Length: 240
Image (cartoon, rainbow, N blue to C red; front, side):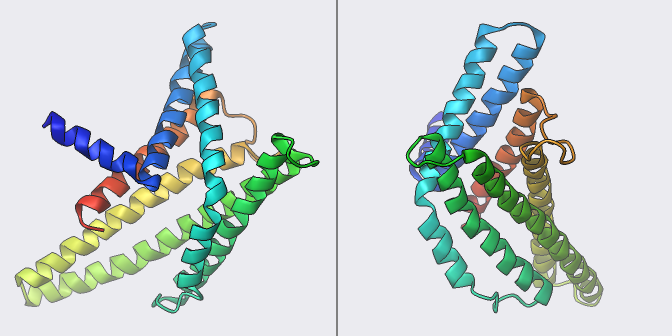
C-alpha cells in the first residue's frame, strides 16, 4: 500500500502538469498555514511559510515561461471549435483560448520587469495578466454551467429511455453523464475559488481587491489546487 502511494506520487511528479499542481498545492497550503499562524502571533514559522509560499509562486512563474507553445498548440488544434456541438460552447471556448494565450506574454513581461531584465513598470503588466486570467476563469465558469444545462437535458432523456429500456448500456450512459456532471460542478468550484483570488489581486477599488488576508488567499488557492489534483488523478485512473 505504501509502495503504491509512493509510486503514484512519483508518477505525478515526473510529469510537468503533475509537478505544477503539487507545487501549487504546497504554495497555497503554505500561505494558508503561514497566514493563520502569523495572524495569531508574531510566529517565526508563519513568516517562514509565507516566504516559502512566495518562492514557490516565483518558481511557477518561471516555469510558465515555457508554456506559450503548448498553449498555442492547443488553441490551434481547437481552432474555431468545430468539434463542439453547441454554438455557445464553441465561442466561449475560442474566447477562452484567446484570453489564455494573451495571459502568458503579459505575465512574462511583468516578470521580466520585476527581474530588471527590461526597463518597464511591472504593475500594469501584472494587472493586465490578472485581467486575462480572470476573464478566462469567468468564461470557464459560464462554459461549465452551459455544459451542466446540456447534461441535465441528457439525463432527462436517458431517464425516459431507461424506463422503456433497462439495459446495461442505458444504465452505463446515465452513470457516465452523472460523472460528467460531478466533474463540471468541481470545475465551477475550482474556478470560483481562483476567481475570488484574481479579484483580490486587481487594483484597489475593484470589488474586494486587496481585502483578502494571506490565510484566505491560501484557503481559496488550496481548495482549487486540491480539486485540480483530484481531477487529474481521477482522470488518470480512468485512462484519460
